[in-house]
Length: 348
Ligand SMILES: Cc1cc2nc3c(=O)[nH]c(=O)nc-3n(C[C@H](O)[C@H](O)[C@H](O)COP(=O)(O)O)c2cc1C
Image 1 (cartoon, rainbow, N blue to C red):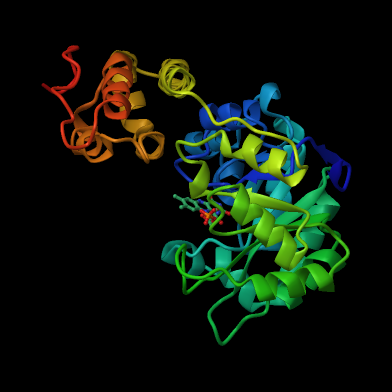
Image 2: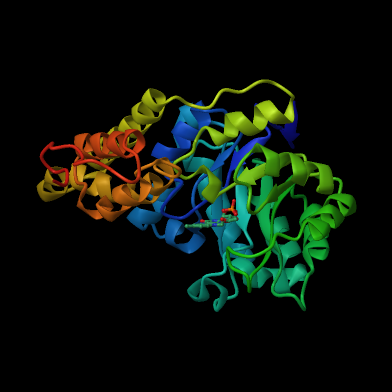
């Protein structure tokens, strides 16, 4: 059984934190399909301390998804430590993860996210401050470096370990690469070699073959899957089975459709729970339909009617319309995609 400090994982495949995607609704579906660990999307430490509604919502977890990590970001040790203490007191979670990889300009220009890769001393101070502020295990998510001239993942990993971090996830691309381009497995292997804490490998894993190859060539103890999980929560079961040499059966079409229905329905329910004003309750289903669009792109990937489905994606506004149109996309040949469903809200 794989452990990150005191946290035991039931699977070697974990879900990458993804802003706007890895909300509690999706995390639960991944967990049910064999995901070993989920994280909240990144939460700004000072916003959390100020009680900003959105930040607090992002940090919320639910027992069915445990083990779960809350991911925080900031560049000042005192602020990050205070937010970690707040999370420890108010949120049920298993670990606190520190974001050191976000490439977004408004975050790096303030010295947070991937900008931290440029200052391993600050990394050590940040991790140490957080470790001292919480009894929860602390992990970090880093990159290979800032750009090709600053590939210092090894140095940063050592800083995380020296400060008391219990594990590390490395997205083996530079900040300059953002989310695309080759994943640096050679450097990932060097990080694994350089530290004693468990290293989780991240970047470009789309199915179990990639996960096994990454393990083989780098020695990572687990893999973190980001975009490969969108519309494919089954990937976690697939990877864990392959990792341990167990057989695995891909989902059938009815299972796929049932998953999509649950995904949109639970997003709808969550919207109703969070709705403050009456107007928000009235359009909760429409907002749920918009909310899951990024996932629908994944749920239809490989279907004969994929392009036909994507053309009408923005018009799908109800749970029934989404499921019926998706079913038509999977059952219609691409050359003759058919008229599609006639349910109200679905395209003609
Ligand atoms: C839409 C999107 C949002 C992301 N948000 C976060 C985030 O909140 N925190 C984080 O550490 N990484 C974030 N990432 C990076 C992913 O966690 C992951 O490192 C990256 O997508 C590479 O993995 P992949 O190739 O499997 O997708 C995000 C990536 C995407 C595509």
